[in-house]
Image (cartoon, rainbow, N blue to C red; front, side, top):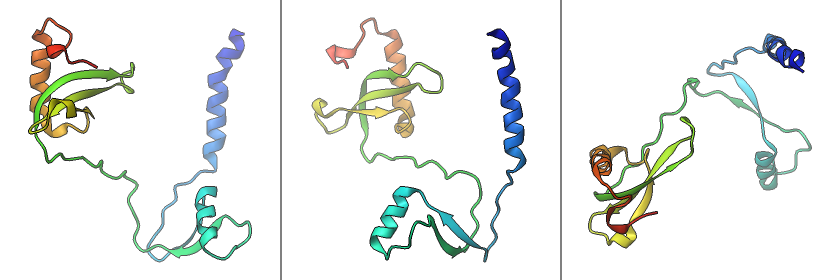
Length: 151
């Protein structure tokens, strides 16, 4: 059993070597003509609106108008037009370093406390000061939740 377990990384490296042998980076220039290989869902959407073109799952040719960099699109940051009155509580979701996130129960100004909402920590990027204040209060508090409000 241990011999098989020891040979797994070697087999994985060998498979990766032969798989990468045929791969090459694709770069398109302006004016190149390309065919798009479509997923079945997109193909079904296109063929339902146009004449049936058989079982060919390629669509085009299309002309490349402008090449796009390989870098991912910048993240879209949500901005709130309302102000935070108080962060009432938090909830940690996930247990790993990568999969862990914190949700905050946020009370908004000029809204009743019953309309407090749960917000992701990443969407509250513009309220870093309020989050910092919450953690300073939370670490000095002896009870689990402020004023009986909890999740």
